[in-house]
Length: 592
Image (cartoon, rainbow, N blue to C red; front, side, top):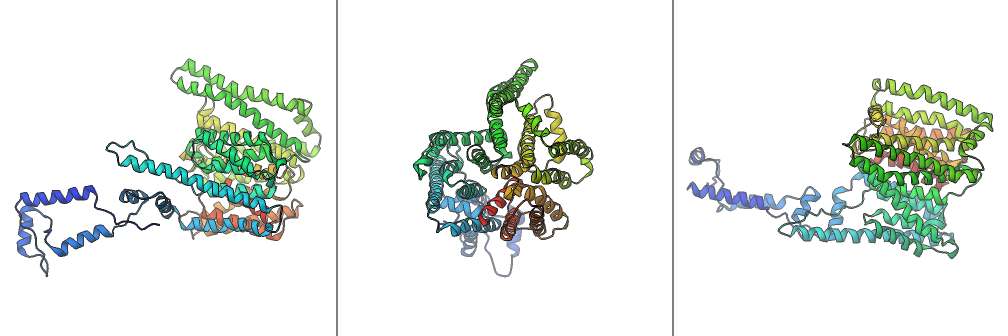
């Protein structure tokens, strides 16, 4: 950090000193002179008569002591530093921001996060076809840093000019992206480099959107960067270059408007990149039907959402008008559900050769094992869900929250091995149901919104109450579903990552850590005992699935991935239902 100037005497300190001097002179009190050996009787009598007054400015000893106290005081917060350093440069502000906000656990995260990143380079540096993509990654990272500096510099200069005005507008100092943005950038680039290297250019364009730039310039810069990073002409797809940045920006915008503080900025961009990968990059294999069904469902209900949004705004505007509010509420529901269903039928029926309902029933009846699994799921849901909601108030908060983690693990673990297509389809449906329920609950839409809000309240923790959305369960399903889809709905290899880490490992770590953990991570409520529990549980689960024939992962892949995931999960305060599966999936791809 650049050398700081000593903190100057503030206006309030100067005013206080002037007032004290005036009080002393108005009372005609002779200045107090210090004497060795304590306060003499004359001084005591003077204080009893006139009150305690400042010591004489002519006292050299007293003056130096007071000035040294002010000179030696260092700013304790970034706000105090900004107040003291009027001519602080942009670089100085960025370094100061890092100094005041980077904690020891952030350093721990960086060390273990850069291990798989460096390992990718070491394993591929001799492959001529991969080396150009490394340069692309470097250009993307440089682009992010340059964009960040330009935006920060502009906002900082505007803030400095504003506070020099007699009547300032009230601009705030620029915000530096959250620490979690590092995860979004690195995980996206590493996974794309390993699985879809030819798509790295368009992912790089999406990564550039992570800074707080205005929407239109952000999308345009993303398109330009994507077109410039294309290495081979046959990979140049103008539709992807134009459409992908728009879709990414659309997802980020929706999460910003409706998620509020519930969804952090880096999480919005992470979701945007996930949507882009699932819609454009996943190559349909043996389970092509499931992948295409997901794409059509997402497209259909996105259309319904876009059509319903204006009517929802009108519904809020007429909230005090009972008649008007009910009319626009009905139109909102109709636009979302009816248009979503119509679009689904219109898109899927020609491709499937029959209606989606007929196809689904036929798909289940084709195999007696599928019928048995569906029957078990229905019975499991009918028994478990009412029981949990009935007896939740008798259970500790962490137990009642983690029940859902264990439940989804129990329901999905074996079916994912024997019937991966059916399980993938069920997870897509579960994600849709949870998303619709959460929209109804968070917006308190009649007739069920208020009831759902009270029903789920016993399961909310402090983080869930920070914003309108309860994202924990959405992240849980996303963390389990995404690896399954990225692996082509085969149920093999790394597709079980989310199920192992979020469904089983994180739950066990939380319960054991809170009850038996006594050694906490720095600046965190998580314990080393919980971290160890996550590591052991994840390793045991991976080997258990391997015993059942689900995967052929190497010992190094299982041990290293579980170890890094456990350490990063313990050191971070980011939502582990989303982060932990992403870290583990990345490490499995790299090491394996």
